[in-house]
Image (cartoon, rainbow, N blue to C red; front, side, top):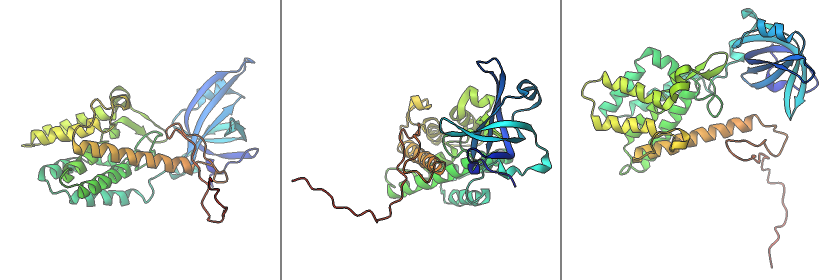
Amino acid sequence: MKLMKKDIRPNTQVTTFFALESMQLKKAKSGNNYLVLGLHDKTGRINGYLWGEAVEMADTLKEKTIVKVRGVADTHNGSITLRVDRVRKAEKDEVELDDFLEVVLGGLSLWHEKLLRIVETVDDAHCKRLINAFLKDDGFLELFITSPGGLSIHHNYVGGLLEHTVSSMEMVSTMAERHPALIDRDQVITGAFLHDIGKTREIYWEIGREYTTEGKLFGHILIGTMMFQEKIAAMKNFPVDLANRLCHMIASHHGTLEHGSPVKPSTPEAITLHMMEAYDARINHLYRHMGNADPEKDWSPYDRILETEIYQKKYTGKDVRPIAVAA
C-alpha cells in the first residue's frame, strides 16, 4: 500500500510512489551536482534531493510521470523533505492513479447532478439554450466536469471547476431570490455557469497541473470570452443585449484590473457574481489551508493569500475565567 505524503514523519525511512511534477539539476558550492525532485500525491507536495548519480538520473527520468522513491525523511525550514537514495520510473501495475489525483468531495456524478438540477430552474429560453449548447458539447463537457478549478489557490483537484461553478450558481441564485427587483436570476445563474469556462482550455492536468500554452498566452478570462463568442455565433436570434451582459460577467468576474479582469463589474448581476464566486474561492482556500495545517498546533502557518495565520484551536467551553472590568 502506498505511503501518502501526509503520513511521512521526519527521520524515518521512506519507500513509496510519487508523481514527478518537476526536476532541476543544480550544483552545490562544493561543485557536486544534485537533483531537486518536485514530488506529489493527492495529499500534498514534497521536495526530494538526490545527490548520487544526479546527472545520469536527470537524463533518465521524465517529468509528469510516476516514480518509485526510496530515501529518508528530513526537515528543511519547517517542511518535510526527502534525502533520496534511489528513484526509478514506476510500472503501471505498481500504482493506482487515485493515489495521485484528488477528486472533489462527493464525486463527479454528485456535482454533475447538482449542475443539471440548477440549470433546470432557469426559465429564460435564451439563457437555457446557451447553457445547453455547452452541455451538449461532449468535448467541452468532459473537461468541464473533470478539470481543476486552479493550480494552487482554490479547488485544485479533479472536479474542482465543476464544484466551484455549481457553488457559485447556488449562491448567486440565493442572492437573486432575496433581491428580485435588483438581480435577474436567470442572467446571474447563466453568468455563474459561464464565468470560468475558459479554465477548460487554460489548465492541463493529469499527473501534474500546469498552464497550457493557450492559457499562458491569454488566460481563462479571455479564453472564456472567445468560447462564449464562438457559441453565440452559432446560435440564431440570440439577443445582442443579453449576449453583452453575459459576456461582461465573464470579463469582469475577477473584479479589478490588477486581478486580471479587463473591466470592472458594472451590472448588478456582474457585481453579484464577482462577490459570490470570490467568496467561494476564498472559503475553499481557507478550508484547504487549514486541512494542511498541524492539528496539534493552535495556529496554522502564515498564508500569503489570506495574509494571516489562522487560530485553529477548538472551543471547548471549559476555559472559564473571570473577565477583568475596568473601574
